[in-house]
Length: 214
Image 1 (tube, rainbow, N blue to C red):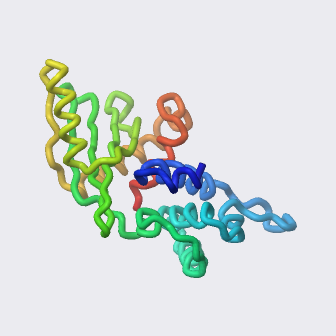
Image 2: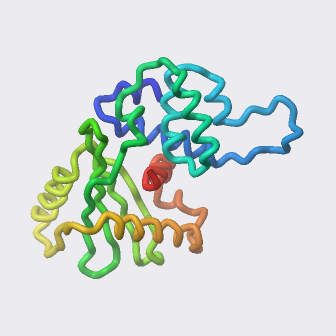
Protein backbone atom coordinates (compact mmCIF):
# COMPACT_ATOMS: atom_id res chain seq x y z
CA UNK A 1 0.00 0.00 0.00
CA UNK A 2 2.76 2.45 0.92
CA UNK A 3 4.66 1.69 -2.29
CA UNK A 4 1.59 2.33 -4.45
CA UNK A 5 0.67 5.49 -2.54
CA UNK A 6 4.17 6.92 -3.00
CA UNK A 7 3.65 6.61 -6.75
CA UNK A 8 0.19 8.21 -6.76
CA UNK A 9 -0.27 11.42 -8.76
CA UNK A 10 -1.01 13.47 -5.62
CA UNK A 11 0.41 13.26 -2.07
CA UNK A 12 -3.03 12.67 -0.53
CA UNK A 13 -2.94 8.85 -0.59
CA UNK A 14 0.44 8.60 1.06
CA UNK A 15 -0.32 11.24 3.68
CA UNK A 16 -3.42 9.28 4.69
CA UNK A 17 -1.61 5.92 4.79
CA UNK A 18 1.57 7.37 6.28
CA UNK A 19 -0.15 9.18 9.13
CA UNK A 20 -2.29 6.12 9.85
CA UNK A 21 0.84 3.97 10.22
CA UNK A 22 2.78 6.65 12.08
CA UNK A 23 -0.04 7.36 14.53
CA UNK A 24 -0.51 3.62 15.12
CA UNK A 25 3.18 3.14 15.81
CA UNK A 26 3.34 6.08 18.20
CA UNK A 27 0.27 4.87 20.09
CA UNK A 28 1.90 1.59 21.09
CA UNK A 29 3.23 1.59 24.62
CA UNK A 30 6.46 -0.19 25.42
CA UNK A 31 5.97 -3.47 27.27
CA UNK A 32 7.99 -4.52 30.28
CA UNK A 33 11.57 -3.32 29.58
CA UNK A 34 12.80 -6.74 30.69
CA UNK A 35 11.02 -8.40 27.76
CA UNK A 36 13.87 -9.99 25.77
CA UNK A 37 14.38 -9.21 22.08
CA UNK A 38 11.34 -6.93 21.91
CA UNK A 39 11.36 -4.45 19.01
CA UNK A 40 8.78 -1.68 18.86
CA UNK A 41 6.86 -0.62 15.77
CA UNK A 42 8.95 2.50 15.09
CA UNK A 43 12.15 0.65 15.99
CA UNK A 44 11.31 -1.98 13.39
CA UNK A 45 11.11 0.76 10.75
CA UNK A 46 14.43 2.19 11.91
CA UNK A 47 16.00 -1.25 11.54
CA UNK A 48 14.50 -1.92 8.08
CA UNK A 49 16.14 0.19 5.39
CA UNK A 50 13.67 0.20 2.49
CA UNK A 51 11.74 2.96 0.74
CA UNK A 52 8.43 2.22 2.45
CA UNK A 53 9.84 2.43 6.00
CA UNK A 54 11.87 5.50 5.08
CA UNK A 55 8.71 7.27 3.89
CA UNK A 56 6.75 6.45 7.05
CA UNK A 57 9.66 7.53 9.25
CA UNK A 58 9.47 10.97 7.62
CA UNK A 59 5.87 11.18 8.82
CA UNK A 60 6.66 9.89 12.32
CA UNK A 61 9.38 12.54 12.67
CA UNK A 62 6.91 15.22 11.56
CA UNK A 63 4.12 14.35 14.01
CA UNK A 64 5.84 12.96 17.11
CA UNK A 65 5.97 15.27 20.14
CA UNK A 66 9.01 13.30 21.39
CA UNK A 67 12.07 15.41 20.57
CA UNK A 68 14.46 12.56 21.38
CA UNK A 69 12.68 10.15 19.03
CA UNK A 70 12.48 12.83 16.36
CA UNK A 71 16.25 13.45 16.55
CA UNK A 72 16.92 9.71 16.40
CA UNK A 73 14.78 9.37 13.28
CA UNK A 74 16.40 12.40 11.65
CA UNK A 75 19.84 10.87 12.16
CA UNK A 76 18.70 7.63 10.56
CA UNK A 77 17.03 9.41 7.63
CA UNK A 78 20.26 11.30 6.93
CA UNK A 79 21.82 7.92 6.08
CA UNK A 80 18.94 6.59 3.96
CA UNK A 81 19.43 6.73 0.20
CA UNK A 82 15.99 5.93 -1.24
CA UNK A 83 14.63 8.80 -3.35
CA UNK A 84 11.54 10.37 -1.77
CA UNK A 85 8.91 12.70 -3.23
CA UNK A 86 9.52 16.24 -1.99
CA UNK A 87 6.08 16.17 -0.37
CA UNK A 88 7.44 13.42 1.90
CA UNK A 89 11.00 14.58 2.51
CA UNK A 90 9.72 18.15 2.79
CA UNK A 91 7.14 17.51 5.53
CA UNK A 92 9.07 19.66 8.05
CA UNK A 93 8.38 22.61 5.76
CA UNK A 94 4.64 21.95 5.40
CA UNK A 95 2.66 24.95 6.63
CA UNK A 96 -0.91 26.22 6.81
CA UNK A 97 -0.70 29.29 4.57
CA UNK A 98 -4.33 30.37 4.86
CA UNK A 99 -7.58 29.35 6.54
CA UNK A 100 -11.28 29.81 5.91
CA UNK A 101 -14.38 28.81 7.82
CA UNK A 102 -17.80 27.78 6.57
CA UNK A 103 -20.27 28.24 9.41
CA UNK A 104 -23.67 26.60 9.51
CA UNK A 105 -26.39 29.28 9.52
CA UNK A 106 -28.01 27.67 12.58
CA UNK A 107 -24.72 27.42 14.50
CA UNK A 108 -24.73 23.61 14.48
CA UNK A 109 -21.33 23.14 12.86
CA UNK A 110 -18.26 24.72 11.29
CA UNK A 111 -16.14 23.51 8.38
CA UNK A 112 -12.57 24.75 8.63
CA UNK A 113 -10.67 24.79 5.32
CA UNK A 114 -6.90 24.91 5.75
CA UNK A 115 -4.66 25.69 2.80
CA UNK A 116 -1.52 23.54 3.15
CA UNK A 117 1.62 24.41 1.20
CA UNK A 118 5.15 23.03 0.89
CA UNK A 119 8.10 25.36 0.23
CA UNK A 120 8.51 23.90 -3.28
CA UNK A 121 4.96 24.91 -4.20
CA UNK A 122 2.77 21.80 -3.80
CA UNK A 123 -0.60 22.56 -2.20
CA UNK A 124 -3.51 20.68 -0.62
CA UNK A 125 -6.59 21.58 1.38
CA UNK A 126 -7.36 20.05 4.75
CA UNK A 127 -11.05 20.18 5.69
CA UNK A 128 -11.97 19.75 9.36
CA UNK A 129 -15.63 19.44 10.39
CA UNK A 130 -16.49 20.56 13.93
CA UNK A 131 -19.91 19.55 15.27
CA UNK A 132 -21.40 21.77 17.98
CA UNK A 133 -24.42 19.53 18.58
CA UNK A 134 -22.10 16.89 20.07
CA UNK A 135 -20.36 19.37 22.37
CA UNK A 136 -18.07 21.15 19.87
CA UNK A 137 -15.93 18.20 18.83
CA UNK A 138 -14.06 17.27 15.66
CA UNK A 139 -16.34 14.89 13.79
CA UNK A 140 -14.56 14.52 10.44
CA UNK A 141 -11.37 15.47 8.62
CA UNK A 142 -10.10 14.85 5.11
CA UNK A 143 -7.65 16.09 2.49
CA UNK A 144 -8.44 17.29 -1.01
CA UNK A 145 -5.71 17.30 -3.69
CA UNK A 146 -6.41 20.94 -4.63
CA UNK A 147 -5.28 24.38 -3.43
CA UNK A 148 -7.53 26.18 -0.98
CA UNK A 149 -8.95 28.54 -3.60
CA UNK A 150 -10.08 25.66 -5.82
CA UNK A 151 -11.66 23.82 -2.90
CA UNK A 152 -13.52 26.93 -1.78
CA UNK A 153 -14.78 27.51 -5.33
CA UNK A 154 -16.05 23.92 -5.43
CA UNK A 155 -17.86 24.40 -2.09
CA UNK A 156 -19.46 27.60 -3.36
CA UNK A 157 -20.58 26.00 -6.63
CA UNK A 158 -22.21 23.09 -4.80
CA UNK A 159 -23.98 25.41 -2.38
CA UNK A 160 -25.18 27.69 -5.16
CA UNK A 161 -26.57 24.69 -7.05
CA UNK A 162 -28.49 23.55 -3.97
CA UNK A 163 -30.78 26.57 -4.20
CA UNK A 164 -30.90 26.78 -0.41
CA UNK A 165 -29.94 29.94 1.54
CA UNK A 166 -26.45 29.20 2.84
CA UNK A 167 -23.37 30.93 4.19
CA UNK A 168 -20.19 31.02 2.14
CA UNK A 169 -16.65 30.44 3.41
CA UNK A 170 -14.96 33.45 4.97
CA UNK A 171 -11.27 33.99 5.73
CA UNK A 172 -10.22 33.45 9.33
CA UNK A 173 -7.01 33.91 11.30
CA UNK A 174 -4.78 30.83 11.02
CA UNK A 175 -3.72 30.89 14.68
CA UNK A 176 -7.32 31.28 15.84
CA UNK A 177 -8.40 28.46 13.53
CA UNK A 178 -5.76 26.14 14.94
CA UNK A 179 -6.75 27.00 18.51
CA UNK A 180 -10.41 26.23 17.78
CA UNK A 181 -9.59 22.90 16.15
CA UNK A 182 -7.24 21.85 18.94
CA UNK A 183 -9.90 22.78 21.49
CA UNK A 184 -12.44 20.66 19.59
CA UNK A 185 -9.97 17.76 19.59
CA UNK A 186 -9.41 18.13 23.33
CA UNK A 187 -13.15 18.17 23.94
CA UNK A 188 -13.51 15.00 21.88
CA UNK A 189 -11.00 13.27 24.15
CA UNK A 190 -12.94 14.45 27.23
CA UNK A 191 -16.46 13.89 25.92
CA UNK A 192 -18.78 10.89 26.42
CA UNK A 193 -18.11 10.15 22.75
CA UNK A 194 -14.40 9.50 23.36
CA UNK A 195 -13.52 6.02 22.14
CA UNK A 196 -16.51 5.96 19.80
CA UNK A 197 -14.97 7.96 16.96
CA UNK A 198 -15.45 4.96 14.67
CA UNK A 199 -19.17 5.71 14.75
CA UNK A 200 -18.51 8.54 12.31
CA UNK A 201 -14.90 8.09 11.15
CA UNK A 202 -12.92 5.42 9.43
CA UNK A 203 -9.36 4.79 10.60
CA UNK A 204 -7.87 6.88 7.80
CA UNK A 205 -9.88 9.97 8.74
CA UNK A 206 -8.93 9.67 12.40
CA UNK A 207 -5.24 9.35 11.54
CA UNK A 208 -5.35 12.48 9.38
CA UNK A 209 -6.01 14.58 12.49
CA UNK A 210 -2.35 14.01 13.38
CA UNK A 211 -1.38 16.41 10.60
CA UNK A 212 -3.03 19.28 12.45
CA UNK A 213 -0.03 19.29 14.79
CA UNK A 214 2.58 19.78 12.05
